[in-house]
Image 1 (tube, rainbow, N blue to C red):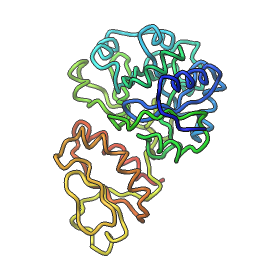
Image 2: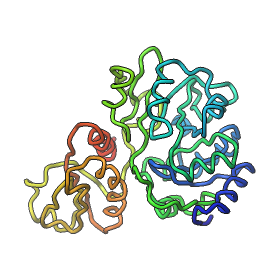
Image 3: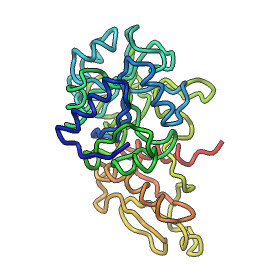
Length: 319
């Protein structure tokens, strides 16, 4: 495994690896993905092995254009078409009926598949030059923090990937929003596109309840996910005694609290988009700061703030 700059030559090298059954980590606008040919079941199996991911957790398939999308999905209804028109390429995953050619391993045996058309130029070049849809979950150990830099991938997965394309930090920094498109669209995972923006196009989204006893309908729906190795809790900073702060880290929204060993502020201006871009990067930095615990300040429960809070709650879940 090697980290290489995402030059035209190295993108060609990565595309060749993918055509030969390889697994390549690459940047998207959301987070870094760990990709393989979506139609090659042996290559897809390597993704699960490298990540330590359970086979009941489905993968997202990345496509370049409408022609590639139709190689993966069986049907695109009017509501899906409207969402595609407004939000693709971009950080929106749609769950649609799959074609039989898509291996069951990709979809965890479900009759549907999550598909996304990324906007990042490196991801799009890789899709174009490989000529294939890419099954690509986040390039991190299963359940851990999503990677927004090539160094995060290397630190988490070691020599698992055949190649890591370094395209710099992911500009959005938060995973895609996932919507299942059936008779009524349903929000399966909050993400980089706010639910309110989606509802402005297709009307109210259903919020299906989560059942930990059943296999998830999409990635990111297990009770524990997105977790740093350092224990994390969500709270208001003010009541925390100074003695508890001395060896802890703090993830703050707008203002740095006093007395903590390490602090990361997501947005001094209170900009939720800026905060989302720094969210995983800040958690990675705090996780490496040698603190005994991370205290995370609650974020506004609207738009991207709701998406970040969903991830913080999953990070703090304990069975």
